[in-house]
Length: 72
Image (cartoon, rainbow, N blue to C red; front, side, top):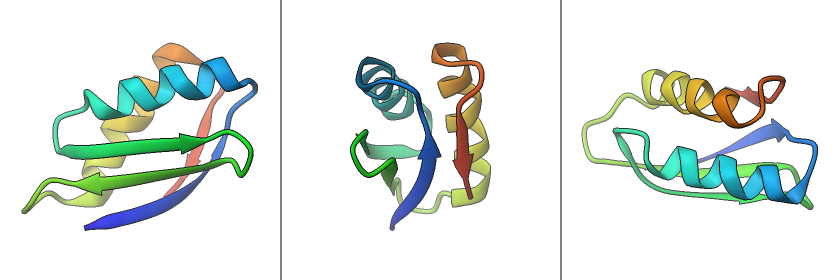
């Protein structure tokens, strides 16, 4: 399952680091962050609950940029 989320990120480098952090999160099959559109596209592994996985993604992304926001 793929979902698109609005994100709030300050710079392109941070967006790349957030994308990398999201990809390493358990339950995420793939993740892409587009800094220009401020969107994150996440593909979840089979059988995963998106809301629970996104909480872990947000936690991982806040290690990169403490004030980032992901709308889910």
